[in-house]
Length: 157
Image (cartoon, rainbow, N blue to C red; front, side):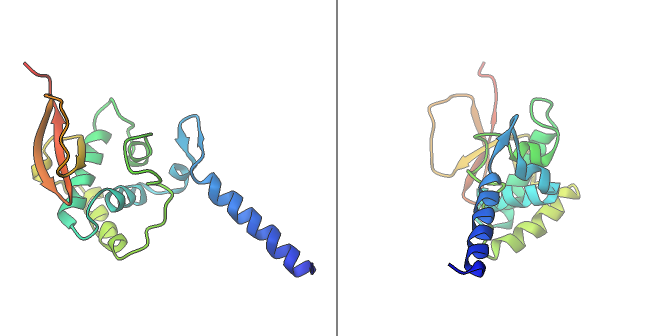
């Protein structure tokens, strides 16, 4: 093995090891959260959680993220909310965004970070894939957009 081949193999091993650390968690904080801006975290939530061609769906997801940021029961940053375990798509903060949906996500993220909200989302802090149904009577649906249904959890009287 030549020294060039050996060096390439070492660099490849380092790159693989570094990439695998992207999803590691220390004390509940994803390393990716520390490298991403609030806008980038918002983009990723919208990209991976909505129909990538639907600005309305992306805006609705962004509104849910901001509703959580403004609720003391959730982290007070976009990256903190998006990085919460089992709340958003697996790898939301580390997987590559590979299609033109990333451009739309960047545009809509700018709007959300400047204060725009989807009026139909209201106070909803939850959503799931459209068409699914769950047997809970505390889910009050407010909107369907971008392949998701958005709902508020309310106490049943």
